[in-house]
Image (cartoon, rainbow, N blue to C red; front, side):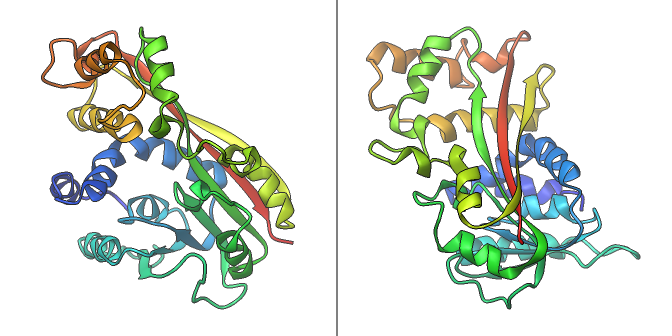
Length: 279
């Protein structure tokens, strides 16, 4: 399903900061998500848990799959449905994505209903991966179907300033979803172990990389500028005043040191995916 640029633009100015970031970041994440979906070769009927405003689910649509998106936030579901209504189905394509409000820990779907279940940047960040959401995903996926967990896993966004970026990554927000005192085996990068404990088979892991370099489309430039704030925040606890000033100068579009203005700019980010097959 092609994205509706007008709706994305409107949502990029939404009063809700999280909705604004979901819309603003989509042009940046779109390519790596499509690469991931192509690699998976998704077929049949799937469930997207924690679907947000539905944009990733819409990228999977039209690739021979039906998608049901679920989120606990009613406002997100309403927006996703509004976006879907701006599109019309073409002959030969599956139905457009369906969006429902619900709880990932208690899914209101019958057993063995879906061919696959995906969670992107959602339950992957739970403190205890071996919990109810994963068990519920296994319950609603058919034997032989796949469970897919994918999340943001790394970035290099401040070329030329590796020490500053390392310090930013060591702040509480930069290290998220890992927290001080958190058991290492509960971190997202140990997801393969959680899938094995769940009894899944054929566990696979893969990382996808997205490059960012000039010339930058205005929507991509805006998305990366928003990404700085999303990834590291504004308060920057633990950084020295000098580091705070440097970070703000490099990431402020109004600054003469704005790093994205450099024609030599190059950065990247990665998404890591874990999959397992329901026996």
